[in-house]
Length: 425
Ligand code: AMP
Image 1: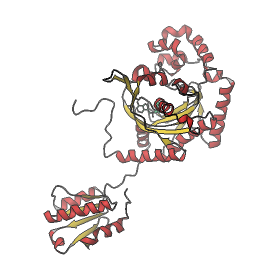
Image 2 (image 1 turned 90 degrees about the horizontal axis):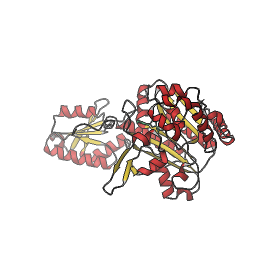
Image 3 (image 1 turned 90 degrees about the vertical axis):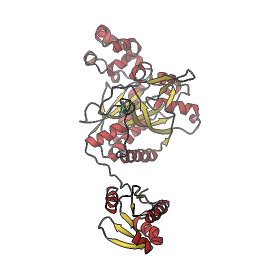
C-alpha cells in the first residue's frame, strides 16, 4: 500500500510534464483569446451543491462521488465536475452584478468513482469554460467553435461534433410523458437503475449503457421531434452559426448528456477510431442551473474537456509534442576548488535567466560530459585545476565539440550572449 497509488489515479512524471505544460499553455492562450478569465475554486464543496447542481438521478451523483464527512460533521464531496462549483462561486461572489456575460474558465483535477480503464480515471483533469448571462445561440456555436479551435491547434484530426437540443421546462415534460408511454409495457425489462429512473427521470434511460435498455429504447420518441417553438428556433440558429463558422456537425436526436442541468443545446465531441473512451469533450446550455443553485434566473452555456483524454488521443494520432532541453549550460568541474567556482558560476548564470546544471557526485570528466549530453545542453563549461591557475575555463560547444578558453570573469556575459538571455524560460 505504501508504494502504490490509489486505483484510477496517475503520477504525472517529470518525463511527461512538458506535454502537460504544452497543453495547458494552449488552453490558457485560447481561453484568453476568446475572453475567458480563470477561476480557481476549492477541490471540495458541500455535497448538496452537486446533488442539487448536477442532479440526484445522474450517474455522477448516484454512484460516482467521493463523499466524506469532515471532523465538523459536514458532508463534503471532491468535485466531480466544474460547472456547479463555478456557478456557486459566480453567485457567492455576485459576479452577476458585473457587465454580462461573465466568461470563466477552470483547469484542474476532478474526481469520480468510475471504473478505471485507458482514458478513464478516478482522478482526472478537466479544462472547462462557462459563459454566464446570455442566451444568444451564437454563443453556443462559439463555445463549440472554441473547442474545435483548441483541438485543431493541438493537431487533432477526425473529430465529430454531435449536436442536439434537450429542450426546456416547457417541452421536456411533453417528451417525458411520451417516453413514459413508449416504455410503459417494457418497464419490467429495463435494468434496475432504469426502472428507478422511469418515474424520476426517464430521459436518462436513453443514456443507459446496458445493451438491453438500448434495445428497448430503440425507436423511442426523440426530444428533437417534440421541441417547443423557442427551442426549435434556438437549435436552428446554433446550426446557422456553426455552418457560418465552417464547423461540420451531426444532429443526434438521442444525445442526452450525463448531467441533469442541461437545457436546449447539448453537444459532444468525439475522436474517431480511438476506442471506447472516444469523447474528448462535451457541454451544453444550462439556463435553469443558476436559479436552481440559489442565484438569479440567468442563463449559461459551458463545455469541458479531459486533459488525459486529449493527450492520449494525440498519442494515438501520432502527434508529437516538442520537448525542450532540460538545461542550457552544464558546468563540469574537477577538484574541490573548481567545484566551488563552478557552483558560484551556476548561481550567477541562473540569476541571469539561464538554465544551468552541474555535477554533485564528484564524477569523472567523461561521466560529466555524458551527463551534459543527456541534458541536451548547448554548452558545457569545463573547469579544472589547470584552468583555474590561468583564471579561465574551457567552453565546449556541444553541437560541434569545439572548445575555447574564456576568462572566468567573462564567462557569464560570454554565455549569456551566446545563448540569449532567458531563451529557455
Ligand atoms: P463530462 O464532464 O462527463 O461531460 O466530461 C467531459 C470530458 O471530461 C469528457 O469528454 C472526457 O474527455 C473527460 N472525462 C470525463 N470523465 C472522465 C474520466 N473518468 N477520466 C478521464 N477523463 C474523463
